[in-house]
Image (cartoon, rainbow, N blue to C red; front, side, top):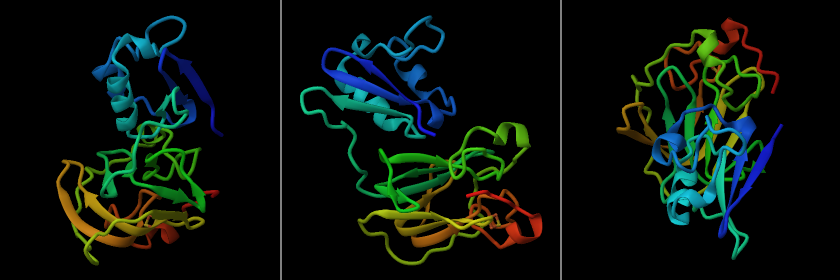
Length: 214
Ligand code: FES
């Protein structure tokens, strides 16, 4: 369930979706005067840095937990990427940066972190359960599967019950080191943690008894 907190500044509003935050710390590292989880009271102070910088950091939040709204236009200040990317993180989630729908619904923004370990209670999104589940995967792509040149377009992401995350649409697969590996027009990505062909699904969810709930 979405729990969105709003922090209003002079020209912008920072929206924070607590259910999406997995505490990567990117925001507080880059703009500690604005984003400070150790501060008592309101942890976001939108006016403690130029609005353009706050908007940039919000747009870079890898899970989509932060979003910046312009008060003059009432519109979000993030924009869809020129090229969709999908990136497995070491021992962690699958980051997607794209204009996307998830199970038919448009995402609020252009970034989301999806579970890869199979243990999230917020399926299909990551909730940091990989830290307790002992999930290990370096985020390398051992077998690049290339289908055709990536084009512009929206990603349609669907969950298969007790199975993979299906991504339909053009994207570039980026490995954990940040290197572009291949282009795809669709793929089945493992979200049970058991595949021997990560980040792709290899059907191991059947023998591992994966139960996703959704
Ligand atoms: S979802 Fe993990 S192997 Fe298919």
